[in-house]
Length: 374
Image 1 (cartoon, rainbow, N blue to C red):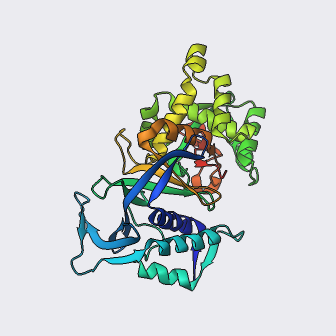
Image 2: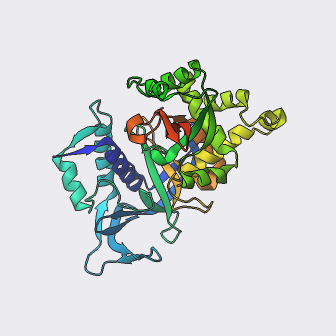
Image 3: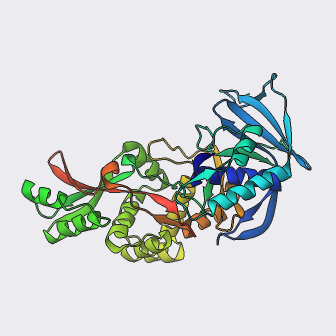
């Protein structure tokens, strides 16, 4: 036996289910199965020792090992490794076993039984998580093995999910403190408030009680600033207001925060643009879809497609749903309705206290967004 996290097992479960079923159901805006089903011909997965291609045939899965050419990404089969074949039902049995492990009420880490460990070795899976630089968990070809590869990431609601936007220091937004000039002892008093789940809110309220005002100033990281400006030249201000409301009012769902933004209207735009054209909703959908398809705070985003083309979602009952950029409207609306703002660790991400910079005090807020569990 060996231990594995539920996140790792969620990725493997998705992979095995796709190989067993040979198809995937498209998801709706509500996170339910649509009528559309796409057949899968082949799945490519990358590990530390190279790539594997799993060809889905009538009753078997044929495994071919190879290398990916660095410049082109073309698959080069290894001449000294013979292809191997396994019944698709073997992958279904392994997926069923993984689903039982994922549904256990235990902590994030679970014990993997010997029978599953032996199966992983036999189908040439040595890394529980794929080893890719482009953030895809695997790539697959729909309909035909000659079809272009499509990169996917996995989100499993039976395990802790990777966020859409992972926060970190590069995802900090700066609010300038004005209104009253604070003395150093006052700043120290604000920053000395004890650690708690609400410490950021308490510091913001204390600044307000002392006569201070926090107004949006800038994005802390220049790359993230430019990435946000690619969505809209005023989008960083909207995002900062949403994070501020999350802390002060306890609202986390993206839909509810957007409704509050419509009421506050931080950009002071006309009612017609807000209500008839749905400006704020549109910008949030655009932002969330861009995150799902690969935008990161510290990596330059120029609007071109990344290797991630879609998302495989494991639902609470173990069923799989597929969201793809070819139906961007459905994908974006699903993300909008099923995402929330989250609180990252204050000490690790370095936000939530007053800092002096060029004679001015700033208060940083951190942006972290993930999918809801249900």
